Amino acid sequence: MPPKNSLVKNLLPSLDMPKRRRFLTGSASVAATLSVTSLTLPVNAEENPLWMKTPGKPMSGYGTPSTFEASVKRPFASGYPTVSPGTGSSRTPHQALEGTITPSGLHFERHHNGVPDIDPLQHELLIHGLVERPLLFKLDALSRYPLVNRVHFIECSGNSGPNSAPEPPQITAGAIHGLASTSEWTGVPLALLLHEAGIKPGATWILAEGADAASMSRSIPLNKALDDAMIALYQNGERLRPEQGYPMRLLLPGWEGNTNVKWLRRLKLTQAPTFTKDETSKYTDLQKDGLARQFTFGLGVKSVITFPSYGHKLERQGLYEITGIAWTGAGRITRVEISTNNGLSWKDATLQGPVHSKSFTRFRLPWHWHGTTHVLQSRATDDSGAVQPTRTVFTAPYAKGMNFHNNYIQAWAIDANGSLSNVYT
Ligand SMILES: Nc1nc2c(c(=O)[nH]1)N[C@H]1C(S)=C(S)[C@@H](COP(=O)(O)O)O[C@H]1N2
Ligand SMILES: [Mo]
Image (cartoon, rainbow, N blue to C red; front, side, top):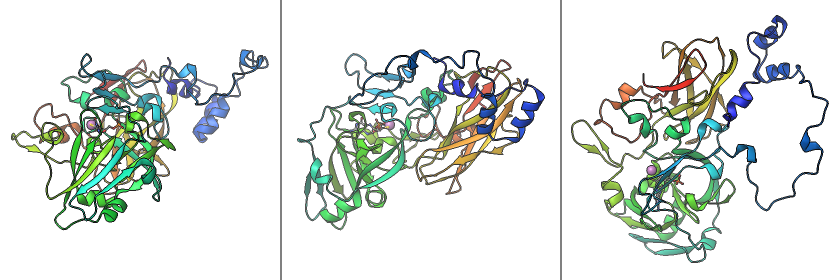
C-alpha cells in the first residue's frame, strides 16, 4: 500500500509549479495550499465515479476500516510461537496514523501468556491485605461507582528496543516505537476503592495480580495508587478490548506499561514490595557498574517523527508537513523542536491542542524539501523541564544492550531520492 501519509501529502504543490501559484503557497497555510492544488481538475472530473452508480452497502452491527486500509496492521512477534503463540507483542503502526488517539484495534499488545477469554459475570476483583474491610467486586458493582475519563498513553518499557541493536534497523516508526498507544480510558479512581476498604497503618505497597495464565503481578507504591491510578473499565468509549485487559485493568498513568496489570483480579496492601517474578527477572535496568536499577516506574520524555519516516518516500520537491507524537510520564509536553540538519539547528514545532497530561501530543512543522539529503530529528521537553536526551547521553550509564526506557532522540535520514532510513547519530 502507499503509506497513508504519502497519499495525502503528495497532493501538496511542488516548487516546480507556475510562479503565481508558488506565491500563493508561500503566504498561505497548508490548508489553503491544498485548495490551490485542487484548482487543477482531473480530465474526467465531471464524470461520476463507479461507486456513485449503484446503491452502497447496508449498515453493519460493528464498523470496520475501509478495505483499502487493510494493510494498516499491527506487526507482531511471539517469543514462543509453538508453546504459547500469544506470548509476545504487537505494535501500533504510527507511520500510518494521525491525531493522538490510537484506534482500539491498533493499540499495541504485550502479553506474557496470551489473552485470557474472561467471562465478566464470573470475574472478581479482590482488595485485601492491610485493609480494615477486604472487598470483593464484580464488574457490575464497580461500574456503579462515579467514573472518570482521561486520555493517557501506555508505553512498554521495552519500547524502541530495536534501536539498541548495533546497527540501526531499517523498519517503520511503529515497528521501532509502536509499544506505545494512547486511549481515552474510563474507570474508577483507585483511591476511592482503597478508602472504602480502609488502609491500615503500615501499608505502603500494593501487589497487583492479573487473571491471565502468567498471573502477571507487580508491586506498586501506595502513593501512586492514591494519586492518579484508575481501575479502567472502558477504552475509547467501549468496554476494554480483551487484548487490553477486559473486563478491568490497572491504569497507572505515565508509568512503565508492565505495571498496568491487565485482567486485574487482586490488589493486596503490603508493608513492602512483594518482589514478584515479573519485577526481579525482568524490568530492571542494568548499569555499566553491574548494579541494576529496580522499580524504575516513570517514563521519560520522548518524541518520534511519524511523517516522514522509514517506508515513506518524498516523491517530489516542495512543501511537506513534518509531524509526529510526543509524550512524557511526568505530565505535559511543553515543547517539541525539529532539526532537519542533524542537530545543528532547531525550530519549534506547533503543538496541537488540547495537550493532555501523560498523553500523546501531536506536533507539526511545515517544511520545504529541495531534493537534498537531510537528517530529521525531534526533541521534546516536558513541564518538569526534562529534555529528550541524545543517544550518547542516554546510553552512557547503562550496560551494553540495556533495552528498557529508551527515550533518546530518533533520527531519520532522507536521501536525494526522497527515501527515508533509520540512522544513529
Ligand atoms: N496480567 C497481565 N498484565 C499485563 C501484561 C501481561 O502479560 N499480563 N503485560 C504488561 C506489559 S509488559 C505491558 S507493556 C502492558 C501492555 O498493555 P497492552 O497490551 O494493553 O498494550 O500490559 C502489562 N500488563
Ligand atoms: Mo511491557
